[in-house]
Length: 300
Image (tube, rainbow, N blue to C red):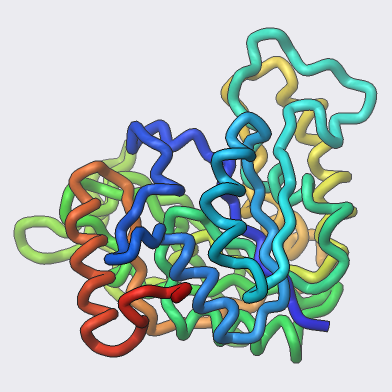
């Protein structure tokens, strides 16, 4: 069975200040997401599932359905605050969605095959999708999941610091832990550093980082649901608490349920963390078109 691509597109785009998921960057009005879907189709994925907000659905479908029709199967999932919370009540002061792991859990009824998860607003590159497809069709099972690992130097922004999950891996290239590093940037000496309470720390350019590109077997849903209920019991009263995919992955490997392979890619990541990133994203896409990686009009 062909694997499915799940796209996390329900984000509020708070830092960027607009619905960056549907902003045009390509010469024919393509979004960053269009390039991911195009690369996924080239690699062999059979379906794309969009996780979106219900109030945004009509607008969203009008953008994507006409161009994807006949090219790949599509489905839509709404991340609702009361989904999979059991008999609990959503607190009145809760406005924030429950986080990326809850978003994935909302796909439980629609996705029955091995699948990849990506962010809507990140460009991942053709190599990453090919490697994800190869993993999902040959190695992925209940005891083996994966994350695509990017070289840190390929994921920075020129317009400010970024937060990255730096992967610690063992000799078998399996994930040991993901350490969230905030305020990562290239300093005046050209070295990559991050800041925390303890001050400034240098980090290797070739460090493997997570850009939220995962490969899962369907058993992730039951595992996530059980963990989500534990998370709710502990965090229900905190309106800012979020249940992220790395929390699920970390517990899965630490509990001995299985391993998470870190699959390296040479792809150059880019995305829109800051408004000022938009022109360089546009330039990066133009460069890829000029080099023959993509046609002028993706869906013509």
